[in-house]
Image (tube, rainbow, N blue to C red; front, top):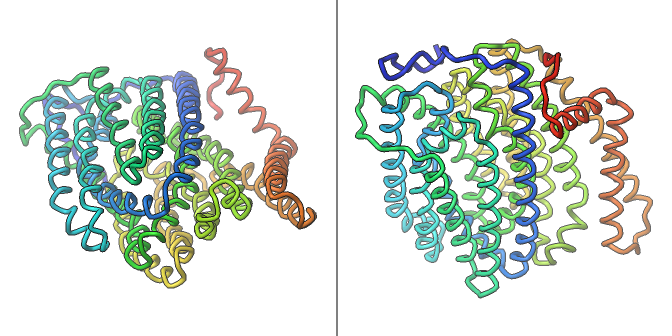
Length: 512
């Protein structure tokens, strides 16, 4: 019932008719591509974090607030600009050249149309936020919608061609370029324009390179050809639009109810809590759809992917997010300055929420890969009703209360997507929970050790020394716990690393 029906014509074939890839090649290829993505992501992340700490010293919370308001409009319209064309191309690997050419034209139309809509909405949005300077900032920010539409089909084809190494390098170059331009413009006194222009220049550059690497011709779209793909993309669009809506309503609430400076503080807390998480999760969510589309009818393979990837994400993100919450009160004033103390409360809350969000991010990808974007759409539409109420109630307790809105309301959506996923791929809930045990055990001992250290250290101890000791203690205890309680799983990941250093085919790929 939930699977979208793509017409089978001379230009398209049944989505179920795919060429199976041996499990061994899938796992080996995914591991190698994950490493490339990890190296590119974290190399650029080091530059991004360094630039962020420089920029926050040069700019004020209000500068980040006005850009945050502008990004709200962009966040809404980027789903219309892309219209789900990239995930549609990834999901349906057998589109003909003519179908792709027509979808490419549709992508360009959606990108340009969404930018024109942004121009119409910028001034009403500025009046809504009572910030007249926001309108031109929003218009310039939304110029990025045009390259978003143009690269929809080419980027989807690069994913289906497994050109993840090239995409990883491109993303790294984009992040480094954005950081460099932002620092220079902030130092020259361009204030919030430094943030806007740095991001825009990097997005345009990335689009131009993708179009040169994977050129795709245009063709005038015909309804009979593009109707099926656009229905699939439309369901993805509605789900994504609903997600984007409630994902930005916390910023809307903070900006409208509490003001521009409060939004700047809340937005920075969100950025710090979620940027490391996004880098880890994107290692998987940007790569895994292409692999899932190849095994969409193989439930055993889907279960292996979900189990293994969930375990790996939890091992990477749980200690990072929970660790940041533990040291936030010392780290924020030391690293960012006293003017950012107001973000400590929401940062602590959002870090805990981020742990849950990190593992849930995989579930919609699985449901979409097996042809069930309709349920994802419904779940996100439900969130569209739940989250605004939660944010509005929380706003009575300031930006920390808004952050708590995520903690109380989002699990309802997460549980719905989780239950649908385990039923769809016929997965035992106990197996899923076991995949979380290593990370949960490690974090439990880490929290206990850091809290004990906080209690034992003298109050007159240097704040920098306290911060360094707490981070070192938490990391050490986490790793030791994994080695003692989950030695076999730790060895498994060490073996994966050794395979990546010397890629080869193993005799028994069945376990993951």
